[in-house]
Image (cartoon, rainbow, N blue to C red; front, top):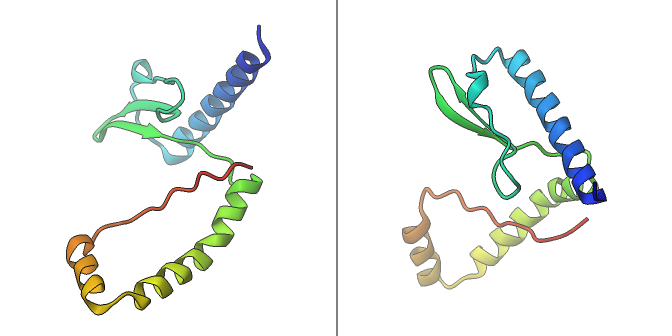
Length: 113
C-alpha cells in the first residue's frame, strides 16, 4: 500500500472515530446505513439525521499551525478590509452596499502550512 493511501486510510479512520464521538455527545439519531465517507473535495462524512435530513460534516485540526494563524489574522483582515472600504469613493461604497447588503462574504485563503 502506498504511503499516501496509508495516510488517507488513517485520516478516514480518525474522522470516523471523531464523528461517532460527536454523534454520541450530540445525541443525534442517525441512520447507520446512510453514513458515507466520500473522497476529498466533498465533506468528510455525510449521514441522514432523523428529523433533519442529510447532513454533511467536515472535520479540521484546530491546533494546526495554519488554522491558528488564520484565526489570529481574522481581526487584522477585518480591519484592513474596513479601512479599504472606508477609503472607497462614496458612489462605490453605495454600489457595494446595494449589491451585497445582508450577504455573508468569505475570503478563502490559499496559504499552505
